Length: 87
Image (cartoon, rainbow, N blue to C red; front, side):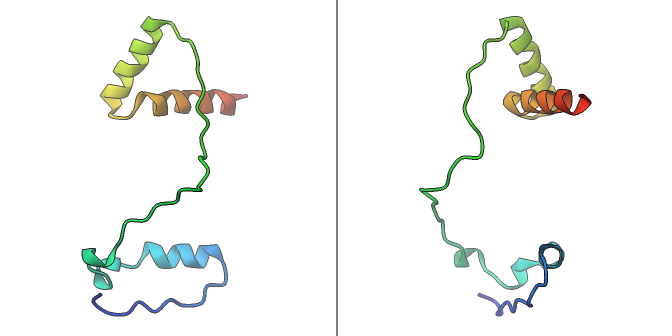
């Protein structure tokens, strides 16, 4: 640890968010200060589903996702979300 990090008292989440957005934690911590942690009881925020799509459509989605350099599942999620927002 380089120097102690003194946290102010935050009145709300916006103040805390602002604090963390403008602080450089490399001034306070060394890489060796961090430890891997596991959250074995953390519930997933996403639910696994199964959906049947025409192979040609899936290949088109995968090709577009590859061009955008994002996972194809993320692209599908974005399309669904945009479709719902149009309603």
